[in-house]
Length: 236
Length: 334
Image (tube, rainbow over all chains, first blue to last red; front, side, top):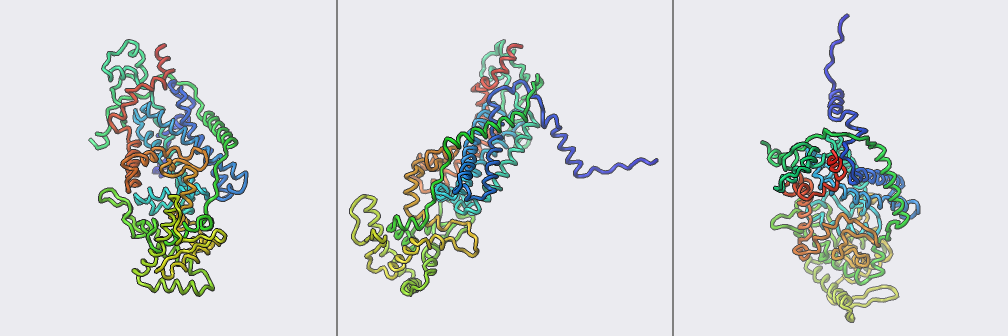
């Protein structure tokens, strides 16, 4: 019998292997977390995703019926209100999440890209909300559009992002910007899963950084990360 | 060493080698979606959402006929804010700038607007069976630019005096008469040529609602671009009067507000803040200055891991002790 000749790896096979190497199933969807992941601050990350889910769900219902529906039906106004309040909640929990991650210096240990994707998501969410406000077809939309145009025109953005053009803004709001936000959130979550949740500071570092002699107690507590230098910059 | 390598500081954060505890991510996400959905529904039931009806040019011309005619005269005369805006609408203004940098001009005139033709003359041409009006338009178009300018100024001057007197709550001049029954505006302006005829017809067209549709007309049947009617209305007083009543003006921190007592775009508080302080507040280039400051700050937010000092604050101010309180307590127990 002759042996089956080995086939060269296909593009598909290479992509699969690279994906599994980067994020094996137990890393992608782990059912355990380090014991330090025990604080209310961690809730705000998942609350941001939950808010985004509610925004998209309510936005899909509004999109199904068209942009004018919510002005003349009670049901439409109800879903528009859910959409609005989900956006308000989204920004609130995302800002708390962002501040929480800042005070954890969550970019440490090779997590620079996790921070960057999170910060960019926040910044892209702002025009995403703005395009919603100017797509409302009411007085708010009229006023916000006529005012926002000056800031955007002043830096040349108005040439391709015309806030007084309802059709263009609606396209940005229901497709281009939400797709960008979702893509960024997916990348952010995958990076978190790949690198794990940032470990706590080792307490001995703070004592060293402040010039104080490490107390015996702090030295005992410093087992969280092992010895580390007094630096918080990224390593990847 | 690469540039990025130089920007990075030394970081000895080690992967976690301690204990793990059960943690159900999917369950947590499902519960979070439920809680957020319930919160959004609760807020909806309690507060609903604002929906103030939009203004129309027809409303504007009926409620503020003198203001409408004054704005239209400035459009015809090419002295309105839109007519002198510059890019992306026309070449009649330099636009905002910082020193020699004119970002506003870099991409040219992408949405061309000729206020005299687009806002006044072309809509007037759509009015049928009015030989007096068509003759007035022909006379206006046949005149040299200097004469057109003189007619426009002669017509606009009494209207400006009327509006100024109204703002200062003084007795308005008798050169402008407003018929409260019909809403007709009569301007006694010698040397205004055919302009009074044109403006009277435009006011009548606007009141009938015809101008709203006329400004939306382009080469195709379906319309989605409201640039022209919005800019025309923004050159008048109705939108800003309504906005002031709803605390939406710039000086009222309006960028982050919306109608009613709703939270609005609170995440724009920092953008709005700059407009309240000098040198931005009084600058004719406030928009570009604020946009560039916010761009720099946004870039700084993204680059925090690379900014010495800023990236070290979390270690120096030990809020992390509160965040990881349970962890440190458990370690203390060890």
